Image 1: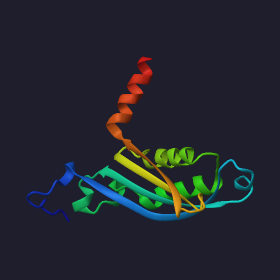
Image 2: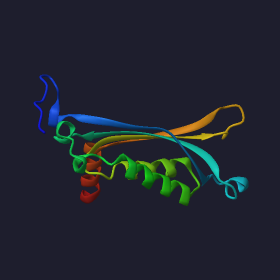
Image 3: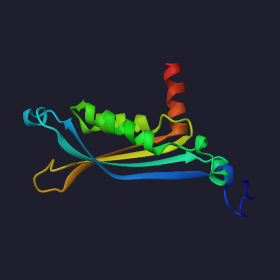
Amino acid sequence: MHHQTPAGWPGAAGLATINVRNLRLRTFIGFNPEETTKRQDVVINLEIDYAIAGHVLDDRVEDALDYKALTKSVIAHVEDGRFLLLEKLVADVLSICSAHPAVRRARVTIDKPHALRFADSVSLALEYHAGQAQQLRLLEKAS
């Protein structure tokens, strides 16, 4: 069933944001001897802006961003991996989140609880913008 787009609503040209909050996983992260032998907790937050098409009004599943599959990919990569640096882990997760062609912006923040004695956690955030990524690829090709 097709509905009329409400006046003032961005419709097919708009963006939707999916947030995955506080995804708690365990992985090997760090380079200190004790960090290489036991898994540590990480808390992952994802924010993904993607172009919405008619599926918003027409309820077409095949056009939607499959956040369950995306989250499963993140879980598998994090839990099966070994990372020396938090930066590498965040960059890898950001790459997974930005792989879908509809993604326009993605932000990944990962907390490493108990990394510092007197802090709740240490976190790192990286962000992807579709236009900037294209510009970087063009610059790399020109070099």
